[in-house]
Image 1 (tube, protein in one colour):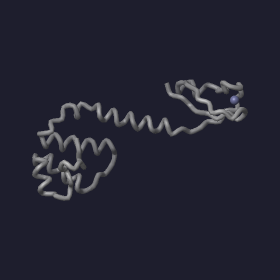
Image 2 (cartoon, helix red, strand yellow; image 1 turned 60 degrees about the horizontal axis):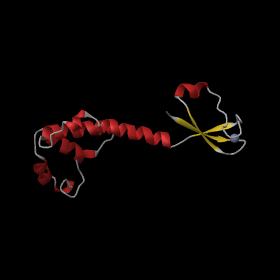
Image 3 (cartoon, helix red, strand yellow; image 1 turned 180 degrees about the vertical axis):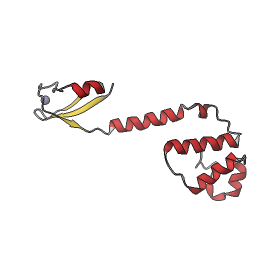
Image 4 (cartoon, helix red, strand yellow; image 1 turned 120 degrees about the vertical axis):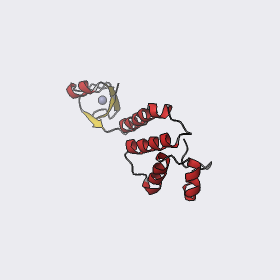
Amino acid sequence: MPYYEYQCQDCRRRVRLFMTYAEYGRAEPTCPHCHSAALKRRIGRVALGKSEDARMDSMLDDSALANLDENDPKALGHFMRKMSREMGEDLGDEFSEVVDRLESGESPESIEKAMPDLGMGDEGGMDF
Ligand SMILES: [Zn+2]
């Protein structure tokens, strides 16, 4: 259940109330310590962090990853393209070139030789 943080204007305590979004729309929250209704909503960063995590989870749960055959450059390229799209980020020309080469069936080793600046090796960089 999501929670909402308030600062009580009367006793100055920080209050954390658990309720659903529907309840939040209707409720008139009161301070559990002094029963004052003078609660001021605090905007928490926690909620934002949570949704970010949830997005990563849904991405990692993706069956595309579970079924990914690391020895199949086309599947790998397709997966990397999908990842970058889901992250909504432009990962740059080099990344695009790698994906293009993978999708055309070129092996990662061959791409690494052709593009020595990539650092795709054991050093990490692109670590799956
Ligand atoms: Zn209070």
